[in-house]
Figure 1 (cartoon, rainbow, N blue to C red):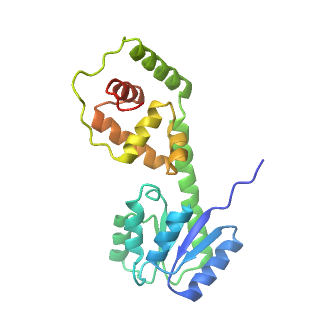
Figure 2 (figure 1 turned 180 degrees about the vertical axis):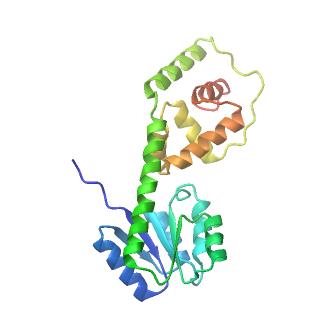
Figure 3 (figure 1 turned 90 degrees about the horizontal axis):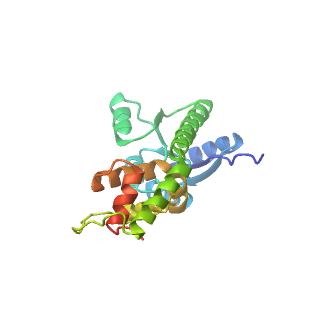
Length: 233
């Protein structure tokens, strides 16, 4: 069996000595590490490499850790990426601010390298577990869903399903429209995530939004609605 790829980490810190030392330690532990010198640099590299985990200092020039985290949480492809903050700040209020901003873990400097590795492994394992559960849920009854879509298309093609008389107005984002098209083609969340180069968690978010905007409550209802209103091809 092919070995699982090493987790890809992005280390963002403006201190060259710490950056080099932490990178070397993490690489010795089997991680693939890319480094960035501040939040702006980290943001550019995160978009290019789509890391499995980001480890970021908080206090940095140009763009600090909170700025980087905010950009990531608002990005379609990086919104679900775990982030660990490294910071000299150890006050409870600072940790609370980080958690409220969406950080996954928080390690005050100075830190024990072994503790850092343990926390990194814990966050990576937790993310893998979430993705496996989401993928398993998304792939439930794939065959049944495909048959239902075929039946819906057949009924509509033969005039057995009534098209909506009123023009349905929807304010779909481009990404929501793309997800809707792929759902109508019978793709499940894992396959949609792969095609759109995003996370399964983000796909689930878009599907939920589509349910709300169309007033449907299942993928089958959503596909029927989309086909009846000619929202997909």
